[in-house]
Image (cartoon, rainbow, N blue to C red; front, side, top):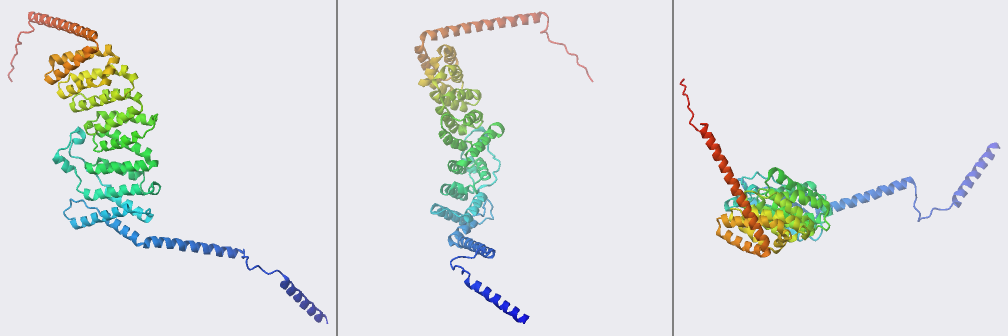
Length: 481
């Protein structure tokens, strides 16, 4: 009986439980389960999708026939030929040149940026071809400033130029066509330092290509400008104070001329220090004749932007004036004449005496080229105006130099030019010129008197010496061994 009652209660509880399950709300077919297992499944599925998509992209880029063709060309261009080794095959050299031409044409016709898979080996190939060791120079032209004759010029040309020229063109095209922010990972500071070292090459063709590439990088890679200016300044300082030997100073100064032309006014203190500490000391270099045109342009750019700097520049040029190098003297006279046209007129009076003194020394030079070039300066209106601003200080020096030339100079053409300048100075201030002549006559008279007194003193000394028998021949005793 008791067992029957327990069985009925269990059946009733089971029926109630089934009724509750039937009456509970069903899950919406639109809702997703948010169980932990379901979230893990979703995350795993997304990761698999991303991996498969990236794999497809990489496989597409690597399997792209155009990219594979470019990579194959780059790999063939990485072989280095010296053109001096007799074991090298001329046919292989021609094949490499053809590949370089083909790669250059691809870069010229490029319509979309190169992917990283191509950029990295491309820049590596450029580095392998360009960054070569430069042997020490055998000619002294870079030191003495003499220009190369035909034989020396031929020996300075690089035999690898047929390949190097195309590699430089490829690098230039890469810099022009690609975004600097993308190339920043490949063309970095060590790369630029290596490019700067190549300016020591004796081949003028290579230096010209380097100048174009380095200048383009400076103009486009604005984030490297400060580093590049500092690097070039270090090359100049090393040349001035240590080696005095570098083939690429002129090309680097050409780049600087363009940079200075873009400076805003007022000039920064950094740029003024570059003028005073680097450009002006370059005047004293032994090979200054080779880069004087570019140096003069850079200096005049500074003076044109801030005429107040003219006094500093002129004093610097006078400080490093050559003593025995007549070619440099002729160049510097022309530079001074150009500077006078650009300096602030307020500085005329301060600079008139040192400038006219140096010009007078030059017109008294026994080298006729130096003397004639100095006399031609007096045809410059600005120079005459500067001299006129301090006439009383300048005239005694100038008139004395004119009279010396008329008396002692050996060249007829120099004497004729001196006569012309003298006539102009006499018209400028006749009374002052006459006064200077009188002072010169008085100085000459005093000098003659002093010379006469000196001779009389020596005569008295000789007479006294003769009396004391100091001039008698000495007697020597020969001792035999």
